[in-house]
Amino acid sequence: MSKSAIKNGEIIREEDAVLPITSREVQCNYSVYEALRVLGGKAVHLKDHEKRLRESAAMLKMEIPELPLEKWIDTLVAHDGLEDVTMRILVVGGSNVQVFITYTELLTYPDSYYDEGVAVTTYQGERFMPTCKTSNLLLSYLALNDARSKGAFEALLVDRNGEVLEGTRSNFYALKDGVVYTADTDKVLSGVTRLSVLKALELMGVPVVLRAPGAEEIKSADALFISSTSMAAMPVSVLDGKPVSTDNEFVKKIMRYVREHELD
Amino acid sequence: MSKSAIKNGEIIREEDAVLPITSREVQCNYSVYEALRVLGGKAVHLKDHEKRLRESAAMLKMEIPELPLEKWIDTLVAHDGLEDVTMRILVVGGSNVQVFITYTELLTYPDSYYDEGVAVTTYQGERFMPTCKTSNLLLSYLALNDARSKGAFEALLVDRNGEVLEGTRSNFYALKDGVVYTADTDKVLSGVTRLSVLKALELMGVPVVLRAPGAEEIKSADALFISSTSMAAMPVSVLDGKPVSTDNEFVKKIMRYVREHELD
Image (cartoon, rainbow over all chains, first blue to last red; front, side, top):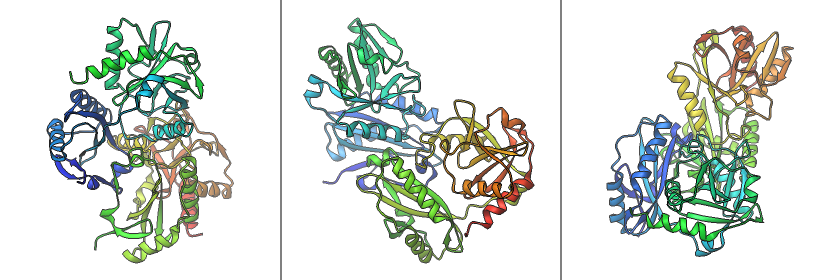
């Protein structure tokens, strides 16, 4: 059966989920989005994603109407008989707001990524409007392609001050002497999973300092890890081609907390 | 008659010039573009636009095949019986490169814009990859919307050092004591019209310094102007709501040179 999608509340064929290139909003990627997990047909942390979607829109002065996202997701789940998938909500602004919901198979990673850690690279660049989840993603695209060309899983974005703010699709953390360092809230995307990670660290009694670690500093950290909706928390074991100190049990504890609280 | 467009060399209906939102390249605006004038059915400075298109693609490591753009434009001109229009060439990269050519009526401006000058505002922000004409246009969109909300025609982008690099869809110049100041070539888009402007200034015996003028400096310039494919050269008479010194005859001389050499 061919896949479906939602456009402004209506079921359409996925292949009809398209944007006209003659629209100024499309040309300028005046749009915001969210990616979320659906487990057992139920959207995970939908309220948090919806809140961030509205915050992103507000930062762009994009007016969007009330969106019955839960109902639309339920409609799509029922229509295509979905269980576990990754969904993407895209809102294109302008005088004629368009809302799409599409899905792919659930984005998951092999156990080895959690057992052994993943390789990351660093990439010089700063996201435009870092607290806003927009479609202005060219930097992330280029940085991730660069990482992949080097056999790495993710690229860490280093800003003009040499601070490591976040990954192209993840938040970033460095553990040093029992303290976790991560960028301050006004400098990065407020990841839905980041909130769970911070909560887990609090419960584990691990102090957190909201300061982005430096690109030099992280080379001698005790452990590095990244987090995202699809990764939960994932340890980093290779940085720019060189092995770095890891503490995969520490990161796994966080990962398990994140996953266990998805359906809260 | 409904409008047509070109997709990978084939005539399609303009309404079919669409992009699938499920493509990663579309989601991340991994694309480059050009806007050019067609006069009397003939593309203006096509070789220059094509060269810049290829340079933009190369900066993104985007591989694009040989494109018989002139032939495709001729096909579209003949099919829709076009005379004077503004055309847009869009190349979306990835494993399956897509090339679109669409058109709108020729973008022109009232004589009063040249006689009286236009209002501009300043906007803090730097384009990502400033020498590359990509679809990563959210900053330009927001800056121009901000300008329009204040009744202005264009927004000038001011970088972290307080330098005025360019407009959202124009190059920028300040005249002071007989010298024209404009951003250095490695900091801005190498405008096809900018080349004509620099040529005109050379012929007029006006020295040019390739240094972006400061946001404070331009308040006391003798004249400010902007240039683009559709504007040619256009004087600025109002800066952030305040009248500024203008020299519209000077700018008109440049404008006429640009227009007269379009069909070279």
